[in-house]
Image (cartoon, rainbow, N blue to C red; front, side):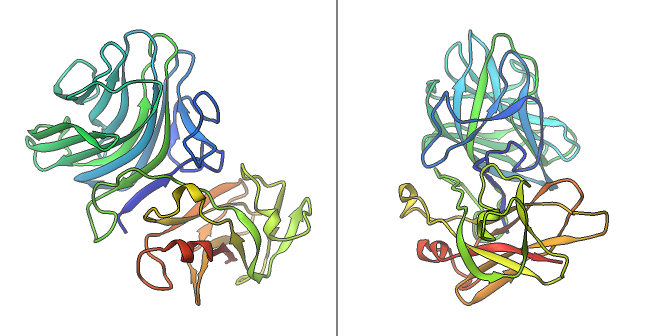
Length: 349
């Protein structure tokens, strides 16, 4: 699999996608979310740092990153938008945007104004959602590529540049937002984040514009083997349909192999006809006691039931997830019809 990360924060929880952060929060207004979403990530406010960082687990020599961004920077500040760090979490470089002239810039390292590699061919206006795509490729200690696309237009194409600031010729961490205290009260808002590396045969290059949509349970599926806990909503599927997720009501089982799967909402009309890059089950669970236990994300597509590797639970609620880049029922790309007929749930292990 080559899709490393997909997140739209549509669970309404800043911790949905993992990672670690400075001052970040979920926002719903100011600006209006991108349709069909209801939530997005806000980095910084009130003159404090605001960023979120993800560790991809293994070093990469090339990444494609796509996200929607709404820039809201005060004064004449130049702020980082996205950082690329090496396998030791040392800064390789960053892409910035400046309120002084509205231009994007690429730097080697993490000091604004030092080691400038490129500047965008045109300015990028603030106070509007834009789709950003950034390619960071490290070929050697002195030769690399950085591309920055905004709304489908390539504004920076820096080739044969030294985009390594450390002895490690790789990137492994991605950061969005800014990790230093800025003047004024800026914030940068992010949505519809996706990250590809260049391995494999799908999701291995530029991503293009897109949306991350949340399809919540809206009816029973073909498996109802767990029992209801907490506040009883009257049906298993309605124990797990709240946004944001909570443990006020839930399903449970102490029997290995007990399985619940649920019918899901259809794809929003707004994105009908778009290609489906990946489907990801997002779950939220915990142990009821100190004994070991785990939950396996489970998907039913057509005649095929796919139970993924079980995720160990703890006594604190945690997210777990499983990604499917192709339809396990066909081995081919997802179709809207297959996704609209999909069931998702969990198996106790």
